[in-house]
Length: 523
Ligand code: KIV
Ligand code: ZN
Image 1 (tube, protein in one colour):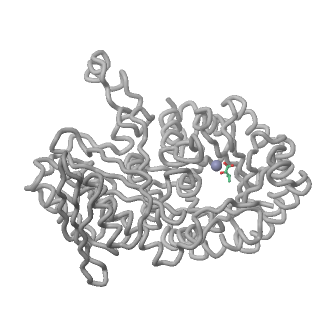
Image 2: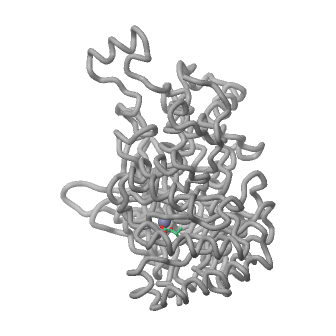
Image 3: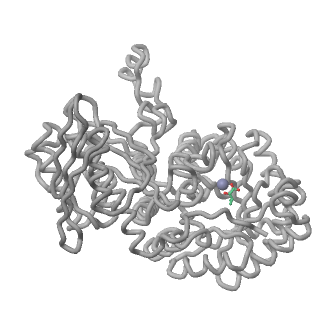
């Protein structure tokens, strides 16, 4: 293996835009901000924070992220329309390094049926949009949507024209995940060699995973000269998802001898970034997912275990520690002090400030009293419960449920409103969860639809904490909630209340009236 300096490929993360717009992956502002901070720590070059013109909520979250993130470029997506560029300009005003990302489709099927525009009109609209954006921003990316199914010479012509108009990055997406790796690599080489003025701009790729080839195609593109790869944590995204960030990054790192390229990513942040995205979206990764799946470093077969014990390299091409899975942890329990606890948080990649640390530590002590051993998963749940949750409009005071096989269930709950008023409600239901959720709805005065209710355990064994995920919908909008407790009913109540609090927070912020995503027209 050679150790010479490698070409650095930029990582453009679109977890908060392409990832977040996929079903079941919506996040509230607090959650998006937590993810953005983590991406900054991970060392991504560009965070695509959202699509400001798609909804007031998206504009608000791009604005919030742009105002806080300092070490990454923050991008906002726009159609090739002045009103979208105006929205992105407003949202990115506070960014240290803003990027306006404009897209327009170039494939025959998109131009004819979706845009109803001729190729000449598409070319003119793309150039006009880039010129308009250039009045406000120096960093402009232009994406030729469905580029892979477009005429390559037309893509070169559009790219040449937008570069001349001021685009600093041109992106060649495989929007529908149709390409094969060799073919995609050859396409990228062709674009690189035939686009007029290509030396003045970076060439990016953005691959979808419909045939399971998004990462392979991205790596083939990098091997053929792509300067930037667009991807998402855990590969979340439209349909079968986007190229997974962790797989591209580790593919480059583990095989830099072959690919001769690397990224600036701090790979030791990968595992916690993946866990954070799982926690906030409630979308779990498959156990055998490369790099971050539960089994990615598990050796079950006796022959493999024997080999790994003799020498890890027999069956491991990278170590769990290289992606931030720590080894040989000291056990944390009720005698562990604040210092050990804080150190563990830091090892796990979390930096929490004074007040938040106080409340997580207090929760840790309560948990340690109930459980002999507090695992990393337990700690992660505590951090998530405090840091990525919406402020509490409603706080849980106490609850009780009476249930059995013969009679229905009755739930009683007392909630404290942030204005100080305490409210109590008794309700009956089909089961304990139905009874208590109904009581909460009565207090809150809304009956959101429960779209998902899922209970799992954080660790193995009957002493494990129960973890509940819920998704609720109200007037076309969606919120997630999660709750953790040694009592599964309490974890359900906490999860439901955290979703209700996220909803109340958004409604109070006045961004509720527009549905999160209207069907958007481009022409
Ligand atoms: O898949 C795609 O083509 C996109 C563009 C907007 C970049 O997401
Ligand atoms: Zn996409």
